[in-house]
Image (cartoon, rainbow, N blue to C red; front, side):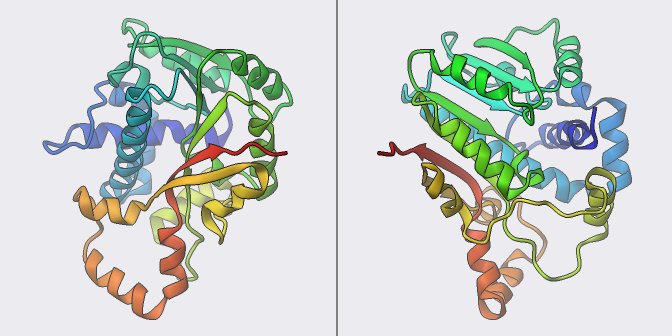
Length: 284
């Protein structure tokens, strides 16, 4: 298991911390078991657990809301969750039994999750696919999933930031080759500000990324995907959601005022990032 895959335990721990709040934005009763001792240790070492948990809670809730709206509207019959990690949506969301949910990740991650959840039953038809997304075999998987009737939603929660822009572009083109892949729900990071990174972020970068920062955080936001056949139909700002859902940082109003006044480009970049829903556009 590589270092990036290990972030799945940390994310599960943050989801556990959110679920245990009296005002939780969602309930994931299996998150702490999935996180295990590894996730608890990672969260403790990195510190700033409240900030980390808030960030993951917002991302999780925002993606839940978009996903369920599309499912309830009958727009989606298949979900292809790429780099699924320790996500438990098939178990915790009220999904229709007819929905086909496909989780793709490294075999170690999926085997561990299957063991922890072996006594639980998913609400929908769940399939696990052991696959490293960097391998060319992914196109074979995409072609197979494309044969299913009805619309397919692609989910990439958290993984794109670790990829190079070239790798994201190639993935976008591979996904666009499949006509049934109608929607793509993803997290889009804002460009990193020039200010020094917090200590916890430095530790995260050092351990999980070898001292590097996230690779994919395009200045143009979701417009990056347009040349590859994907059009943004929804862009949900995490900053705005944090205010609405009461998970904002301390003195958020002051930070917003300062950014609007003295760092307008950074503020614009933040509003162009967050949780994005792309729609496939037919190309002639």
